[in-house]
Length: 128
Image (cartoon, rainbow, N blue to C red):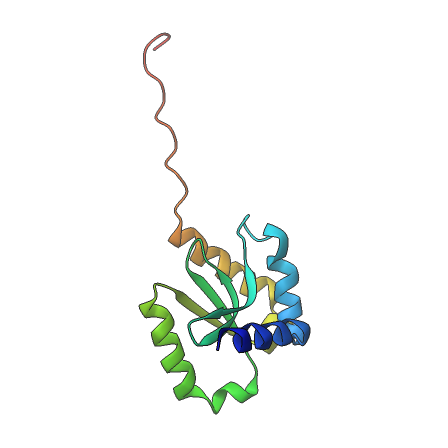
C-alpha cells in the first residue's frame, strides 16, 4: 500500500491544478510565515493537498467535483482531526480570484494557533 500511495502522491504533484500551483507558489520554500509545507503528502490512507506538520495544519483546495464527495470528505476530515490536524478548505476559484483573502485567512489561523511570544517586561532598576 505504501508504495502505491507514494506513487499516487508523486503523480498528483506532477499534475497539480492551477489553483494548487498558485497556492504552492505562496507556501513553498518557507515563504509563508517561515513555515515548512509539504504538498500531496500521504497521511494514513489519504493524500492531503498541503500540510504543515509542525503546526498540524492541512490545506485542501476543492474544485466542483467535491460537492459530490461530501461524505468522503467528512470521513477523511474526521480521521485527520483525530490525528491532531486542522483541515482548512478553500475552493479553487477562491484561491485563483481572491489569493490575498485566502492567505489572510491562513495567516489569521496561524497567528491564533501560535500566539507571538509576550513582549519582555520593561526592566526596572537604574534610571527609574
